[in-house]
Amino acid sequence: MEDPFPAWFAALEARHRQSLTFAEIRRSLQSLSSLYVERRDRLGAGSVFEGAGKRAAFALFYAPLHFLLVREIVRKLGAAEPAPRAILDLGCGTGVAGAAWALEAGNAATIEGRDRSGWALQEARWNAARLSLRARFVTGDGAGALSQKSDPSDILLAFVVNELPAPAREELLPRLLSAAKAGSRVLVVEPLARRQLTWWDEWEARVLALGGRADEWRFPVALPPTLRLLDKAAGLDHRTLTGRSLYLPALSSGKR
Image 1 (spheres, one colour):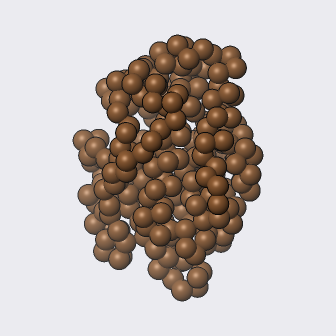
Image 2: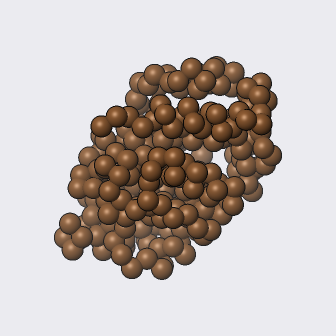
């Protein structure tokens, strides 16, 4: 099957460079990257999506990188077989992580994305339409979505658990473990650096105790020219994509 990434990224670039120059996006990316590296305490307050420049920088830079990383993780885990019927993408942002999983599985899944950012949900709808995905994106959070879930959707949390307040994380973990026991696959993806992941050890221990996996990933990648230029301008180097994941297979035979 033809790789959908190049055509999608070209359309994404055209979309966000209609009203912003490359230089404007580059400057916004430099500001955005400093938030991730130096001022992570502001991420939960929505600073990532403040202003058109930062929104475009996130959509055109971080979102494609997240797509490529999650796609590779799904491949290595074998999480596309059998293909998910439904993916619940919690804290979905612009929807690219759920899209990567669904496309890798042959576009058989319906995606339900939840996020608190209206702009991110709008962007997620555009991405899903461009990638010909069946998807629904609504305002909401993780715990609320899990409490309402009656079907055994597979569950994805990509680059979101670390941004939650500690009480929300503590509430979320047992619900995810219960969902796995009820027949859902659960995939959690976070950056490789552990400095901010004070909760990771506990989550890893609980996942491993149920027969799941904890992995660190490094994938060499050839980025499109615009991504390479933005990467260099931000003082970053994504010739190798890195991340870490927790993965629980469905622990109930009722789903498969």
